[in-house]
Length: 106
Image 1 (cartoon, rainbow, N blue to C red):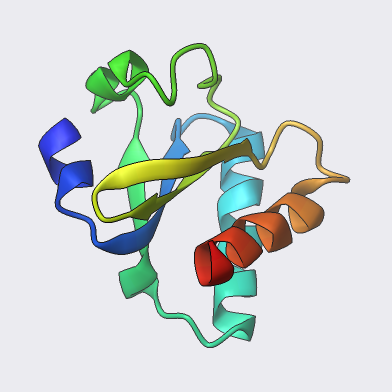
Image 2 (cartoon, rainbow, N blue to C red):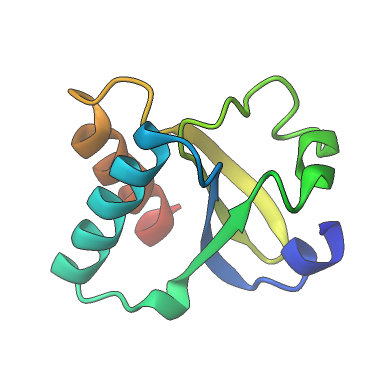
């Protein structure tokens, strides 16, 4: 998994547990916001944390993955920003916009 992230030049990693309603809701909001900003799915990499448990070992995600739809911005193979999108449904849109601002402007 670390190798996959290391190969990302510029993108958004979305971590989810397929069973999580909050992660599903966050993914839908995130893909809608990306589409609104004319960004295609090539900018988004979805990782199922149950199938890729090694993400829990990455220092940037340690203690931050709870199956709620966590997301990260990756630049030049490094995770530079992490947020949880789905824990509080009232904040999903705001956090998606924050993620996108960081993605676009660093």
